[in-house]
Image (cartoon, rainbow, N blue to C red; front, side, top):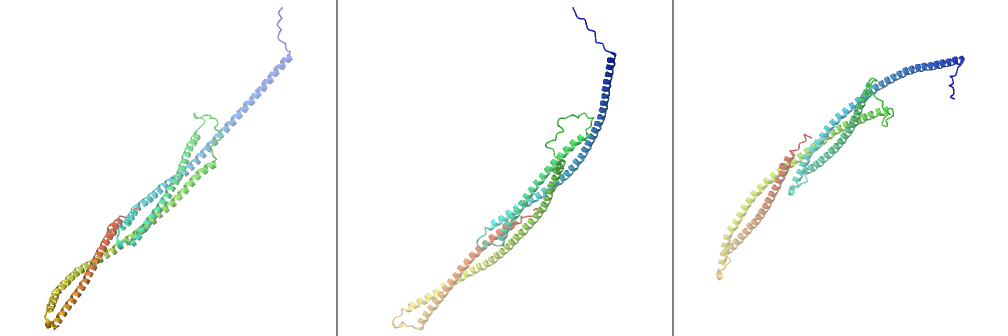
Length: 402
């Protein structure tokens, strides 16, 4: 038989009142808690809004301050960069002057070497280690010394330009980095809460391993500026040295060039004078040779003229030696004939002795004529070398572009 359904339980009025009171108290407690929570939420919202607003304002101020610092240091670096640029341009001009000066020594060096080579072609007694050769050799030393100094200074200049360009590179990099930073921070400074292109990024608050401290950042730019300033001052000092070197070496070259030219002029004058004296003496010797040849001819004629009288005397003596017997007398005629032969033979001997002396003198004059002609030839060649070759070649030396 099916069971009967049990009726719902019955509660007493006390239980009913107690339940109502309990529900009321629970609801009131929950409502009061919710009200407190809402009040706390409003307070927290207002507080966080204020904190966020102040924080953002502080960030904006920091960004503005950072932009001012960036612009300040960028201007400082940029100013130094411009100064370094100008110094590089100025030093490049001085480098060009050094190169021009070095190039200007090439022709004089070639001329001096050519003069020494030409003068090796002198002959005989004119192959003298004279003042010209001494000064030419000294000029070679001066030019070599000048070229050595100029090349060494040029090497220093090239190195200084490299150091300036290195400093310029770091300044340019610093300016570029600061421009990029200014662009980024300026963008950050202008971003507002109403911008559409704002997002949440993961890990942006973590420290970047490549980040540096503000002190390191300031020291970096300061170090670049100081390095550039140091190199700039070194360049200024080097420029002063360059101008001093150019001036001093130019003076040295000019002085030695004048010394060589004066010695060469004096040598040409001495050689010309010596040649003139030799030519004049040659004329006298040749005149004397002509005179001596005439004298020898006269002596030969005189000797020849004595032969007929001598033959007559000899013939007479020979004929008279054939006188017969008592007629072969040593009479005065005989003595006179003998005396005549002796006198004529002595005269011929004297004339022959004079002829021999004259012919010896003629040979001596001819030898001197040959020697004089050879010496004149040598002097003519020396004059051609010193005057026509060396002096004309040295006239092309020009230090005005040094």
